[in-house]
Image (tube, rainbow, N blue to C red):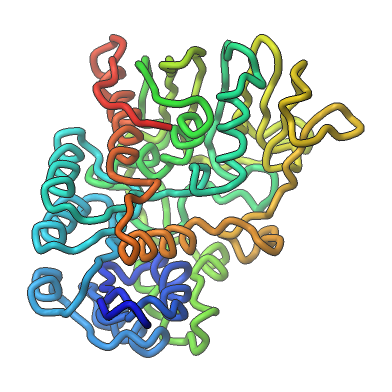
Length: 409
């Protein structure tokens, strides 16, 4: 890092896959406080593309070599879930700050190992996703309203996170990424979708216990072969045109893979501050009839309700109207929707939409330069991980799993 005048954080990237080239790298290359030093991937075609498109200065095909030799302050770990534990530990033990793409880990013993290493090293860490957390001003406002009692006592909630179902064509399941979504080491769709427990905790506070059922519903899948991504990157000339989602939905799925991890998890969460609710996580996309609902989070209390979706980011109706910033003619407080930042072919984001990849990048760099603790830190990631790992443990044992971690929110 440089001096106070024009300080920069020297960044290394491991994993030059879809999430890196579509979301993180186009933003990092333009940050005045970032020096994009190195990129690392097992495929040289990808590291070469990232140097050409995003201006990375060095490339590595061996992660240990990058950590040992590259002059970097922070590592963005954007690889498949099965690599997060060794890659994070290597970076942290070398004194590097880290951003860890979801999930933190797929086993609690590994998650605790990472957390202890980060605390011991005293480095900054962000555990994705930061969407639907207090880093997002809309969710910070919603959490504050809930704490003030806008819902009264929370009674129950429901959430079904099965993917985008209201616009199509239906995807069937993830169109690419065997290592990221289908192998046992990946944790399957449950650990790809921590957005669900993240929303619940962001609005209702820490989780107390979970009782769950988990299964593999669909064993056989076809996906787009891995080399199609490399062919796509080879033809990209604009760094803002490197979003593989723009094309992968239309590519032929010719590679057969088997689902090795759970893809259908139904949990009942009990919250420390009151309320119980159901949460279904799966990823077999099917269209639904417009107007019938898509399973977004709904929270019901003695004095009011909080609903996500229905054309808005969130809406609240309450008997405590004096607690609301405003009340619309229909009697609700609505936070306008800001669009979906992830999908180029799907509805475009409105100006100012919260892009969690960008916001997390900015937040980590700011926290490093200002020496402050990130909002979406390792304690947060540990609690969200336990909500998912605890669901699997409950499903295995047939008993309620009592949480051992907590988080201040």
